Image 1 (cartoon, helix red, strand yellow):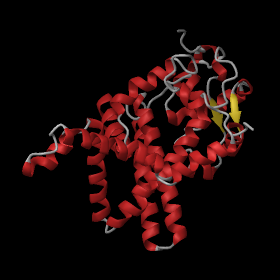
Image 2 (cartoon, rainbow, N blue to C red):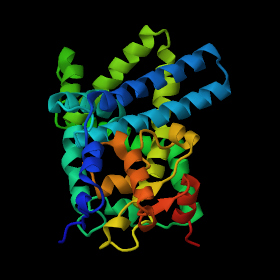
Image 3 (cartoon, rainbow, N blue to C red):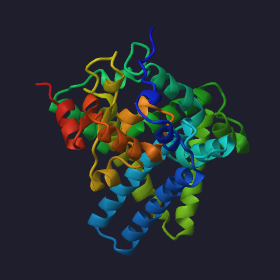
Image 4 (tube, helix red, strand yellow):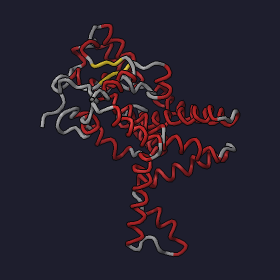
Length: 321
């Protein structure tokens, strides 16, 4: 099958512009990882200092958005965008970004690069995320309810763990006296082991800060509710109802103009510049705003799929009668 069409950056940018757009910086790449964890800590602290339903709800939304931020930064690690040192890039991407939210950098990277090679073509592994849209408002409402009530989290995180444990118990792997617990953990897939280890470390950090219950009531609640919902919105915004012509490289993904509150609660770390990312994936995420500004200055954003807000994206994605 044919690969996705491409545009040479030299046909759009000058040599100096392209050199600046592709320049890598450890500080610019790693600071957002620290920022995500600092925002999580601040949100939990605010809810602890002023405990009431409003600060709890805000903390869950902020933490869930930063959990999405960690997944986005893992995505950047898959492109080598967090650090100029590959070992550091992969360590941070795996342990500080992927494992805490149940992802796995090693398995995600080849899958995601296949998505870039074949974007919106027949062999695109992500094609199924965009193909069903537009849907009816009722269909989207049902999906959002499943996200916000923890059903998506259960399906993606808890059910596979239970199936794995049931399979091991049925085969005799769950027995073994005092070693049974350790055996059960070691027998799990490596990505699941990393996820559980990360949750244990995060719980210890919450407890050390005097907020052990916040691990459950904020961190896990956010991961089970707001994180799945904004992940769904992100997936919809990137490709759903965006590609009018799969042979046109300008039409393969959508950029969404995000307000400050959308960047805070829905689309952190420049993820909304998705058309630019698909045009030239070698531009690190912290240079995407500059790339968008240059394209706008050159009058090229008119050729792209650009939405003015996430509300507009959802209206398009739920336009089926």
